[in-house]
Image 1 (cartoon, rainbow, N blue to C red):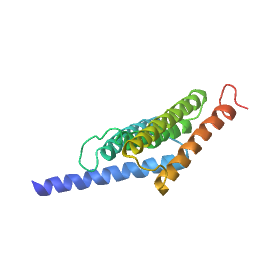
Image 2 (image 1 turned 90 degrees about the horizontal axis):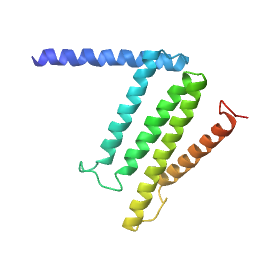
Image 3 (image 1 turned 180 degrees about the vertical axis):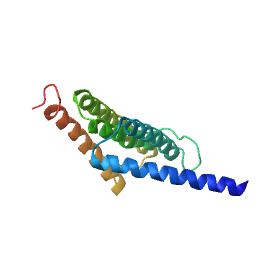
Length: 162
């Protein structure tokens, strides 16, 4: 029975690797089928929620508020929402362009929530802010995301973009 299970697992891994290669080809070519788009959206959502929760509950498996909100919100914002926004934009068209902007800006809002959580946590513990490369890169990334959202909203909006 163990041998059967190992064979089954190997076949599943091969199966998923094949699908991953097909997804990569479709993404790189810029042509996404509706099935690929739906699958990628589900993957981004599940992955970001799962990894965000996992990171939020480390090292002892418990949610530690407010710190735990930081990795959860940052992961769902940057990986989940931003990934889904990028896939949505690849579909093209008026509605998808507007949805892209909405989803991407939702990602920025989630990141701002994660930023607030870590800022508040550091205040509670009396620690200095932005002393590590991680903190400094995080601030730069959030500011760049806000800037990209503002530029996209003003210049690339399908209704009134310049």
